[in-house]
Length: 323
Image (cartoon, rainbow, N blue to C red; front, top):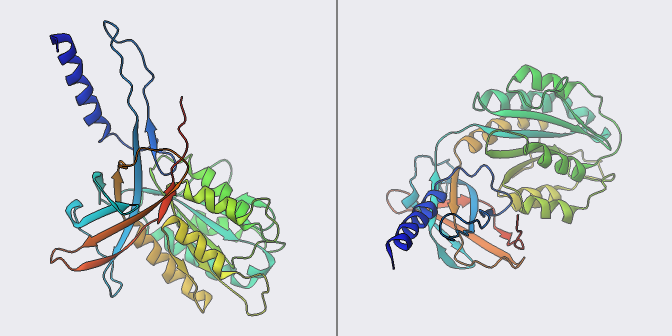
């Protein structure tokens, strides 16, 4: 190898190392492709690099359910389709997030509005002051709650007003509302993203299907928490849908017996988001064949005791996309 070749080999190695620590704000769905176009650099030399990253948001608890913070990268192990993976980046800090509160405003939710508004205020007060929050109210129609053209807010008073503004009535377009919220999250500056969906799980007005929404969730780096509020005489309620939506994203589903419990649940969710770990790895399987890849994350504490980890259970390896 001549001196010119050795020089470019060193530059390529340095560039690969740098990519592993670049911010992942541009990561899309289960993996990010960082593909500089082939270009002539010097003396006909070219660089073509394809780095895929899988980004996981993981919540960790003891067997008794206590949130565990302060863990290090060495406390975690990641497997994809049963094969060990090497963690490329790890983050445990309380960093600002973008969170959408997606609130069912159909007729079946009319009696629960005051409790839901109180829960939104509790969530905002328990959040990071630099979080980007927004409200979506929906029945058969979908509307953003913040006044004017504001995209996000961190004010508890503004969020409460945004929820209290509409009158509960009409049918339910839950799947469409989640789709709109996922799209709106992409406008946020914060990389970590989540949704809190308050609904009875019914849907009788959406253009999207449940499978379409689950597929979209599976391609997004968004943790979804669902809070199911039900009436005994509500034939459209569907707690199973709320469980599936939360599980697909690595989130959590809550089905309280009393709507007044929504306040403490939102405080719990805010704490869960703030104590999440972000784990990034580059899959050992390089194929982008559209097949499902199962993910399993294990964690132990400082004494070696096993902990409970909640994260998304897998992703679909999207087909290659060239710029």
